[in-house]
Image 1: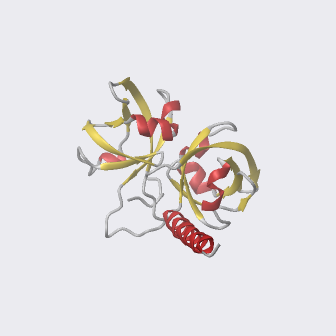
Image 2 (image 1 turned 90 degrees about the vertical axis):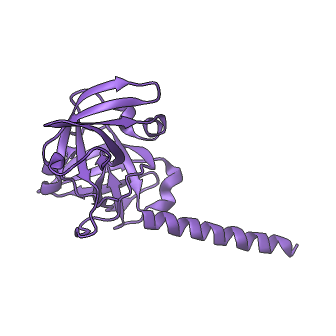
Length: 208
């Protein structure tokens, strides 16, 4: 489990095809201080397992399922990625609960300076619209953010200078793809309500 508070920006050094998926090598420093092989790291919001460690790098394997569901299929050598170590029980939960299980891929539709802040507009598949609410939490490339406004298949977020400078959002352009993980609490509520609606519908049909 993660908080969505990015600790470090890493850089892709190698991408090697494997029989199933790919192996990626990332340069890093801070997150390696107390990491071990087998530890979980969120890379652009995707929970992955360290398979090899060096003085200034780590490696991990990416499965076909992760490639299909995330932006990892678009990664190139030299790309920057957001990094966060797994949450410890003693840590403050400064962001929100992020599982590292990406739901879908979105796209940056617009980037507009708003004084000291920067407004980002992200588009997303409309079938997920029931999972977001204004002022609710969402993880974009592993970054815990608050939704400002919502339209039919897009939402806006105001990015403060610290978040822009501390994450890969500083390198993003209009048209770039991003990983989206919706709030786990919202997903559970949506599933429960769906079951209630289905049960009520079945009871209604029994009366006909």
